Image 1 (spheres, helix red, strand yellow):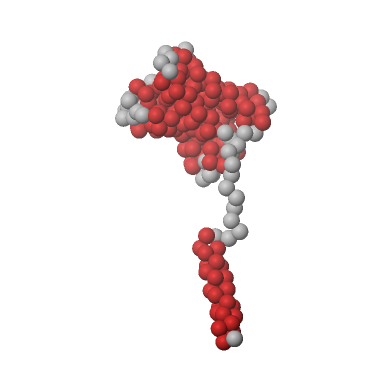
Image 2 (tube, one colour):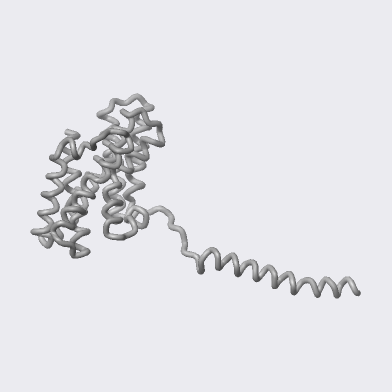
Length: 232
């Protein structure tokens, strides 16, 4: 069941990556590259970090073929698929949950601690999207929008917590996957977001320079008044 869901998640992620290529009007090769990067990129990074080489995507070429299929479908019928984008995004949420749960399970099997498990869960779920955005010179979407990374981090945390409670691995996988999917769907429905940092009126160096200038000016204006008081 997990393998089927993993392949399904790979296919959906490949489609979302291919659509980024459509946005930038790339050629067929560009579409396929982004579909592969998004579909299996996170898993490859995870396997490399865990020392599991070659990555699963190279051991079982089904994953690469699925990515090629997703890219070709978008290249041929991007307009028709775009009309059903809500369905694609719902499937994308499922893929996110599956990847987060699988990442957490593999990290646990490798003996990682709590933080490591949670981080690997997030990397598996979002790594492909980060690689995709970097390839087209965009700020990774997980850093500026959506509840993507946060949902996968929380999903990974659920896997850890349920493990502490002594739950079976299958139940832990289902719990982590469900929590991640629900959070992602709530994000799409209600626009969940973490607090954002407010932009500064100027660069830090400029602000520091202005602060020092004001401090010096204030000191100069204060010294004559103190001198006058002393003379009195």
